Image (cartoon, rainbow, N blue to C red; front, top):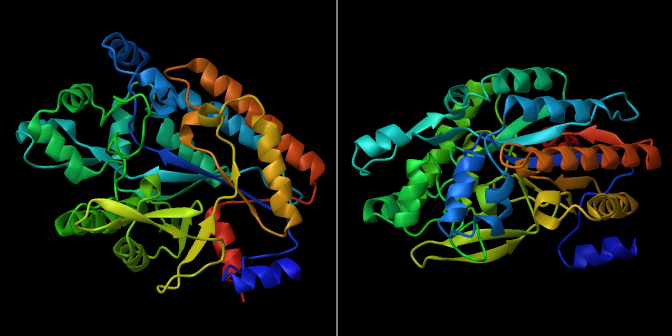
Amino acid sequence: MKNQLRDLVLGRLTTRHKRRILIIESDDWGTIRMPSSSVYQMLLSKGYPVDKCPYNRNDSLETDADMLALIEVLRSAKDHTGRPAVITANWIAANPDFDRIRDSGFQEYFWEPSNSTLERHPDSRQVFALQKQALTERLFYPQFHGREHVHVAAWMKKLRAGDEAIRLAFNHRMISFNVNEVPSCESDIMDAYNAGDTNDLKFSEASVTEGLKLFQETWGFASATAIPPCYFWHEAHEQAMSRGGVMGIQGIAVQKSPVVGKEKWKKKYHWTGQRNKNGQIYLRRNVFFEPSILGREGAVSSAFAGIARAFEKGHAAIISSHRLNYIGTINPENRTSNLKLLKELLQLVVSKFPEVEFMHSADYLEFIRKP
């Protein structure tokens, strides 16, 4: 009661319940990254510090082998209802169409569905079928992450200007790579919903509408929740998501809200159960299982401690765990070691909390929306 009164005074009355609910949210499925280990080594040889960025070191388009290995681990853990662990797979619906963009002389932007990208990749031709099968088994549940994972206006501006690193990335069918000692989502132009001016905002708002439509065409159902790329979004994006049927917005504690026309952003803070003026509910991640980013040592114990804290407070444990943790194209050990850790974490949770319930984000949204 004391904590509830404190939260009420602070305007942060969070969703509490007695059930032990675990959600794993995983971003970036379907999007392109580093295409191969040979491209990675080439960039390293040219002096680019791609080894300083965990995404450049490890992340790539998911392959058949990646999906099969992940599915095996998710099947290995069952909650008290007999349901397996499930990944909320936040899906990028499209990627840049590099050929058409080049043919336009870098004057126009074009995109292709992510499925087309996957089908063209020799090691990923069965990925969509595997993901569909995993969906029927309730192991892999897609939700909307964006039409594409690139700030289109900023990217096209650099392409037209002939930016050396961006053109080099483009020639290898990449959006960008790390050119600084300290990588960031903004410098790598992955912040799709950032907005420098009104036209930029309108373009990305329209991309939300088109992306949600493409998501439904791809998966056969509408996305109930969404997670904006790099935690950048404006209230105009919330409205576009609301019109498209999205009633839950995933994220961390801080939203990066663009200040249009000033090329900067401001912080907005969120908590699970908070509602905006559209009636949408925020789902705040409170546990991190990111061994490729934070390191493998202590990854299981740290994540388990976060889960235990959430359960102790009567909160759901909402885990952040990006795709790069489970990809083996650039570095096969990345996938092998991290999946071993994920399996260890899931089995530890089931052992210590036998009453645990595995939910995806759309499940949990429905649960907390009930009166």
